[in-house]
Length: 366
Image 1 (cartoon, rainbow, N blue to C red):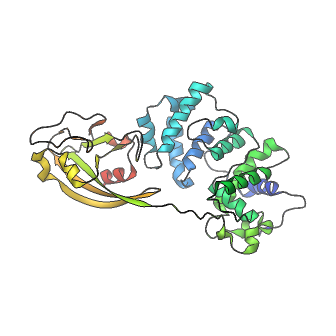
Image 2 (image 1 turned 180 degrees about the vertical axis):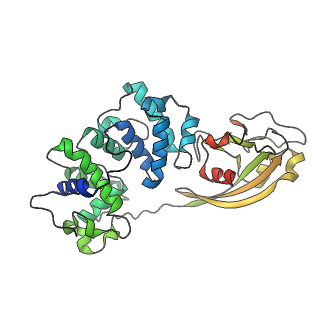
Image 3 (image 1 turned 120 degrees about the vertical axis):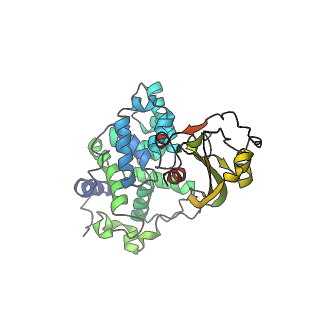
């Protein structure tokens, strides 16, 4: 059972002591002050569970053991290794950040959270995590887990949908940092407050009896920890119907096109996408349109939108060039197209290594 804080023991001191004895110590990116490894894990852990990240982290570190290795890689390879992890803008920004570390910082990560925030894809909390864990900078993090811990402990009832209220929580978080032996305490405190949110102060059914600060926690005393944090703004969801041309040869080659560098699935290789069946049909030579076969319709959930994907199969005897989008004119009978930029046939041994959207990979692997 939890106990009250010891006399004169602060929130930070309690968290540091708890982490030493009860926190997580076996994660592959722990027990190191290598900013490359810590940064890589922090990017991967954004909106992704630890159990999923473990294998991806291991593969990235094996292929790109140093930031210079990641910087020198082709984006296609980076996206290929990232494939299935989702939120691909993280991978693109991560690649650009590695290149900036090499080009602008001599291959050495900046040591301050302020400087780290100048790198692509590194926000305030991620920069603080790297700076505090690796360089002992006394700077607060405020990711989802930490917001939950602090708002419950403080009884912070302000709506975090408001930037003003979130800014206020940042200021309070900064005031709660360790004040003594900062060089040793800061990394353990940062790890501890993250561990507390991940393993004890969970969104549903928190294990308050295991919490080192339960006796002083306002939410625990109120008996309603799940009320916190308060965030009333709801995402407005939309939906969209899309048609995918799943063209395949008798040798199992697949026609894929690389998506633009902005928008949904940016930079990934994908089955050609169309906004209607008519548009898809227009991309296929007239002589082959009778071979189109409607496949399954499945839903893919994005952060703000539900995609209803219609897979349309086309099996060809040979690798006939096809259109990549709806921007081309209709194809006449027996009039193959010239090859489309960023589109090609990929053999069954080649496409698995590409960066593919999760629903496309699932469809191709059947």
